[in-house]
Amino acid sequence: LLQGPDLFGWLVRRQQQMQVGGPPICEEGLRDIFGQILAAAQFLHGYVPRVTHRDIKPEKLQFVSNGESQLKLLGCCSAVISGSPDATRTRAVCTPLYAAPEAATSTAPEVDAYSIGVILHLCLSGRFPHDDVAPRAPVKLVGTAWTRITASGRDLVRRLLAMDPKKR
Image 1 (cartoon, helix red, strand yellow):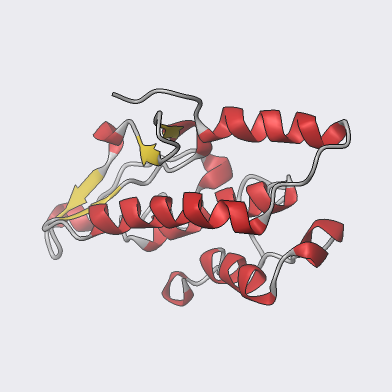
Image 2 (cartoon, rainbow, N blue to C red; image 1 turned 135 degrees about the vertical axis):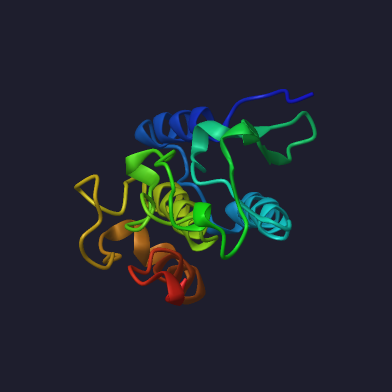
């Protein structure tokens, strides 16, 4: 049974704490959370036929009582058998702010990787990676928030948010 806040609620509270002088969300603290998110996505992607969530966002990541995060609302996943007619005919079931550029036409696991990258960017910087809903250019990690992030952390965000799905 899932108990506790979702990641969105946690982020809102952390942002409010930062506005009154609280510490920023640290990269170290996010490693465990995102390790669990990536493990959950990898678990889905390992199914045969392949399963892609296609709508990973903070509201669908909920903390359980022991502090772990879990994906919820998995009913909106897309199961695709490679080579089947359904592999090319997809229905957009994503939230535009978190969606990969190819999300409307793809069920590849890279769609989920991009969404996870958006969430990581949001957690580390307090902002979405793109000003517009539809990403049109590679993400630039600028601003004071990124000066406290390690080079490997910045590299991970850049790779997850690559415009070319093959580079995720």
